[in-house]
Length: 231
Ligand SMILES: Nc1ncnc2c1ncn2[C@@H]1O[C@H](COP(=O)(O)OP(=O)(O)OP(=O)(O)O)[C@@H](O)[C@H]1O
Ligand SMILES: [Mg+2]
Image (cartoon, rainbow, N blue to C red):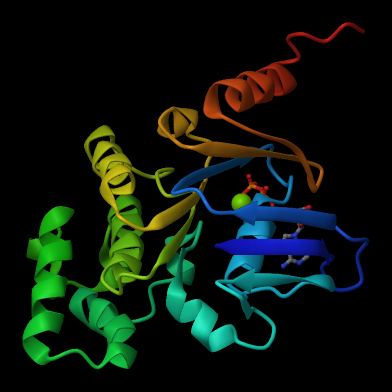
């Protein structure tokens, strides 16, 4: 369970973006939607301690992100909106191995995990390939793979499908559906959310609606397209 209690957050020297937000995230599939700049990525980064609140607190299974950052980050995997922020090693397999290092797995287990994840996203042929020379979508898949191999208990995915073709988008959607873990996905890809348990809608840093997908998506569509406005 991830809990935010009276969380306020502002970037340095700016007015607070999120104010006094209290929400508990316990369902297996939670979507986060909202306009550009509404605070979704900021919210996501607060969930694993990449950002810490200015006031209030965020806990993951009772661990405060401010005081237990390292434990929290081991439990909560995070896939960035921009895969270049995530891919750190020059060769694909090195990048995957890097994340596994702290887990100190037996070599055969490490190898099996890497092989499995590369196969799942058709990246086997790119194992020894320079990471920077992958296509945009392949980088997005590598960034996702780099977190999946660690098998964290929670997965925060910030726009996991933006660069993907239909086949890979479907693969990622299926992976999200089939993963045993809790997944919190920030996305503009609304179709991804139909079978989710819950969707949070942000606007101007505020959580304006917290509902089941049909209601949340309808509300968001109306908000974005101006339909339903009376003025
Ligand atoms: N590192 C930062 N320093 C200062 N301001 C920031 C920083 N990152 C984001 N912001 C500001 O915070 C606001 C919310 O940004 P955020 O990235 O959370 O939005 P978002 O909902 O994820 O948008 P998008 O859909 O475009 O990804 C924006 O006004 C943005 O300019
Ligand atoms: Mg964002």
